[in-house]
Image (cartoon, rainbow, N blue to C red; front, side, top):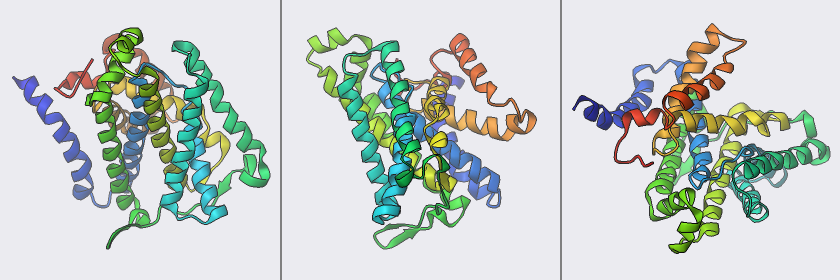
Length: 321
């Protein structure tokens, strides 16, 4: 009974923590920064996991992230697009590259698909790194402004006014991606992805459009990851090829998803909101030179002790296997 009560209360406790924390500690700038980025990485992890739900594991999502970042910034600088339309357009650029993956890697599965995506990460990075007249090459692009106010009809949300408003914006972005992630788990399309993951041949016999479902998952995953890249450029104030086309960006969502639980609605989100603040607030001050190695240890412990992820400790009806 106690565990059942904890299962029901866990999502609400998480929401209370994320929404009520800034109210309880209005001047805790570190809280806003760390938990805001935790929300950002939660959205990134759920975006990655949408493709993984179909049984395909990508090691090259950094390609979408970097394309989204550079496309958003260059569209603002070259075509003078406003920030948020440019970020969404950058998402479309990443989605187009994802659809190209779907065409070229159509017959690849398992490790072959993962290695192909890792190789595909290098293609846009090399182009951006060497096209100095257009992208500034390895020097990167600096001096990017904060995210501007977001005008919604007659209301202007001061997103970039400070870390507190930025935190709430990233929290809202995380919730939006969570709804899409939930749809990819629990909708009819989500069950089709599950069937494809379990047995492609059986799913096709039952009438599931295997290629179409996977292509939709890849396109949505690439779009959301690219939008994250566009937002990241303004969160950091600069971009460079090694920064946004990195293996760290490609691997980090995988770690968070496995740690939190890939088959739970709140799995990747839980992984990000637990692991990233723990690393930044506790491990980094205590072990500044080696704190990143803990992520490798986390994966090993997850595989051995709770292979379904941390969210299985709070298993609810929204969790599937």
